[in-house]
Image (cartoon, rainbow, N blue to C red; front, side):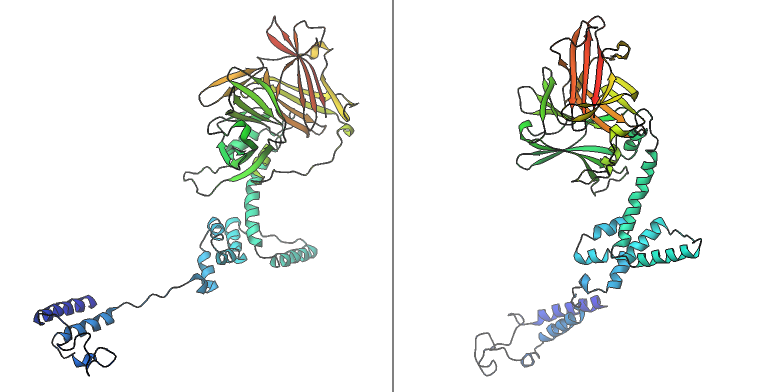
Length: 493
């Protein structure tokens, strides 16, 4: 009806305009702007509307203005969220799930305060995990239960929110921890480490920082799983120049496998952090294209010969607590576990050692040594010596399957560096608990003099000196068989 009245008055105004004088609608002659008279007043103001509203053309204008005033919508008053009652806002937030509630708490201080209300999170917790009913067996248990209820009621703000995320994390944590309870007796490591890492969709990211504060983050290109370790390689992307790298960080990243990718970032757990200014560097081999540089303890950097550019970066990780390190750390801190103070020399049940020499894709030697004989020696300081292979005992000597070489691959080129490989070592106590675990690159050096009179071939040595202990090996190259023999293996911890 309002639109009909407006159309009627508009047509009426058009008809009246046709009847107006040629000068168009306006005040009668003699009342123009700028003229002074008794009608206009000394201040130059226009006469009252009643003085000329009787003109035939003024009727349409008055009716049109009155119609416009009647149909004008009311002015919108701005409504702010902080003016709404708290009960209404809490009612609106009660329809959100835990993920949306956590995100909205970062919008403003008002939402941060409301999104931490215990009533909302208690409702989310109850709907997600349900309520656990428990009946006390005695009056003492009933009293203890009442005390616990009072303690829960007196919990500070944010208690149910912490309970929700703690229970949510514990549910997934207990699930894969149960899968890691099955231990291999000869390695002391869980059987299902590879399966758990693949099921949880864990990947590894490499972050390189340069001298000017810039960062480059790369995702792994290839992962090689072995019996007690894995090797991760990054060979695609833009690497900083070798001399400009100031630090190296590796993070474990768990990505949720869903059809619709989420926009929120995945959790990153720091596994490794190296400062290139303080860590030791050593040249361990090369071929016609690259040079291999070992950065303690487990990083290999492939550098193009004659250039300062990086071809690839390779890292070897031991399986011991690798799942926990890849999931339970923080983006800035490593995962730490309580250290049990135990003296290896006081273990009455003896020791066992699992020793592996391998390349990223194949094993060269894998041996398990049980009931290892130990004795205390004094080198730089007091150490426990374990002789696994004695050079004077011929039946203990081990034949290496295949040649010792380290394959590498960049974006377009690939090759292999001779006389380099990776050593993975696990020392176990009598309870099959790992005491010393290491996975590190190692290379062969030619000995200056013969190491054994039993062999007439070329003699070589391989040494490892790390924070947890030392490893010394002696090898012989037999020309007739074109293979290496490991004739001595001694560990110091």
